[in-house]
Image (cartoon, rainbow, N blue to C red):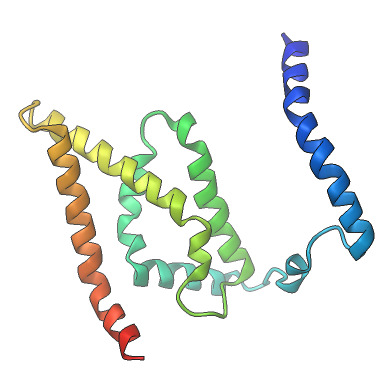
Length: 171
């Protein structure tokens, strides 16, 4: 069993190693650095408080902080299938904190994990709908509850974003 797993892993890794490995070595030889210049351009900050501030402020301003409970609810059930999205959110948030945030406006660093976060929120809406149908003892159609929750969330987000959108339009 152990040999079969090792062999399968080698079969999957070999094409990646054989294509990316030589490219990486040639690039390292040509540029003299193992990583791209962008890696060295933004070193990590010693002040993690700035990164935490950046993350929290932009999550509040964008309205994503209020969707966090739904994202957490989306992590329930079939956790193994959602680990990639969860890891993406955690790694993105940790990068933002580690790097000390960003000097540019409009929270571009949130784009690192926004698709995965949105997926977890959507799954959370589905889990919320299942719970509501269970509480209603099956009298409510699941699709109706899902659509209602999704539209309600979208309306709340839009209402919360109106002042920010007006401010941006005034510039």
